[in-house]
Length: 491
Image (tube, rainbow, N blue to C red; front, top):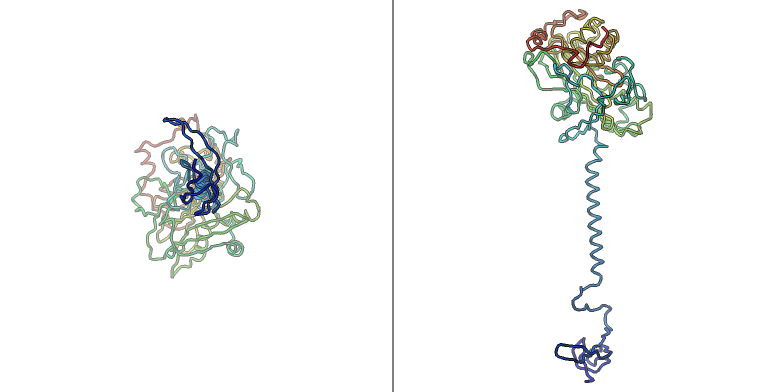
């Protein structure tokens, strides 16, 4: 066997030990016999020890780095963490707005002739998203088989504006929808200063989300700003609040928007309210304009006052209020403004109602709604009968005594009275057991019920004839069609 070997580092011929050419250390280990196809040969195998920089040459047929699997694991973990992070971001983007966003079209004024659930309105689970690209969802939370007398828990709880307790009305009562409790000075001096944003501006100077956007879709009671000719209604029934303003030489009308955004006891409050203001060179409309403005923000004042006194908002994150207004009728004697108000706590309706402010434009005074028609028990009986035909069956009035219904009519904060091209729309905002809502009827010719305490022409609306329309279309009310053998109201 030769005593010389090839240096594995530089290839020089040298003796085992230290390469005389490059200084590489070579140790001879042992001889190994290897069987081959051609016979048995001896091969000398040497273990080489590298004395240079601390790294190892890769063996043939193996990965270049023995740490490759570690790098792969690290990269895999990084990918997993990135995916989780993206999922969290998507989750936040999708669901956080449900909690923090401040703010739907599901009903009409209940004067339709077919059975409807729009006249006995109960709280509905809705999403008051202010994003115009998002439609509200409806998710009724009412057990249709529940009996309010034997199973009150089967109906949704209704929040009493005067109490922190859930409210049960033992008989029909007025739902507060007016301005009796409103104090404008207190509102300006105690509530407005804590707002992050508050302004009261002409709608011409700001974006009107009710007319140009879709805030109307968040109202429980529909408002339509598209003008309809006064002889252009398809039926003699007034089905929703609709614009009927005609320019008048005696006064001008300005649409205004009130915006409020602030915090009360950790509760985020967002309100967007519309109203109208009148002006004239001959008539002082100061009192009228105050009444029109106060009606727009009365619900906001009532809610904040109650929350400020209770200091209890642990289960509520945000409160959103929408109040839209439309002029339902006007001429050179009277003007009528209808308000549709819907309030939300979190994703649930907290309250909703409609209300009318009627104005004597010649005197510049607000008309007392309770003094327009003769509200007595006979009228209440007439009202229930008309409602059964126009709105189908409404338990709140059919199960109530005439005297109790009359009491609600005589309460201006519960009464609904609007002048319209079809005559007078009259009804009530009510509470009954665990439910609340409103119901109205259309009276085309109201002379028989007019008290004559106000002197103005009552001729509008007489071109429509409900009774002839119902006769021609075979419209009537039969209690047996609703599973009743007799009417359940005591009149």
